[in-house]
Image (cartoon, rainbow, N blue to C red; front, side, top):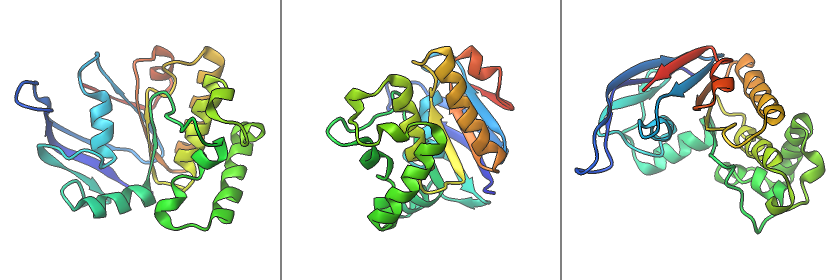
Length: 213
C-alpha cells in the first residue's frame, strides 16, 4: 500500500486568478475511496493533477510513502507517475484514431513493457471490466459508458497504487455509474488509494471519505 498525503498546499493559475486550497493538508487512506467535492471552480480537478504530479503546487508538498515528490524533476515525477499512478481523465480522453486496445496499453510505453505482454494484461483487465468485445473498435464506435470503462482499463494497466479519477461518472447513466464505481471500489478493496473528483450525488453517497474544497 502507498501512503499519499498533501501538506499546506497552495496553488494559483496566475496573478489574476485566486488562490486555491490555501494551505490544504490531508492524508488519503489506502484501501478507501475518497471524494474531492466542492462547487465549480474550487479546484477539484486541479487537486487531482497536483496529487498525480502533473502540476506543481505554489507552496506545500505532496508526499508518497513519506517522501516529498512534488518538487522533484519532471523526469522523476514522470517516472513515479508511470509506476504508481493511474489517472482517469474526464470524458475518457481516448485517441480517436487508434483502436481501443492501443489506448489501454498506452501506459506500458513509459515502463518499457513488451507490447505482447502489455496486450495480454490489457485484454485480461478488459475482460474483467466487460469491454473485451470492443478492443478492436475505435472510440467513436463505442458508447460513453464503454469509453469510461476503457479509460479505467488504461489507468489500471500498470497496477498503480494510486488511482485518480476526474468526474468518472459525470456523463454516465445510473447503470454505467454503478459499474464504474464498482470497479473503483474493487481497486480500493485491493489496497489501492482511490481518489475521485466529483459533483455526482450518487457517487458521493458511496465513498468512504470526503475532502470538501
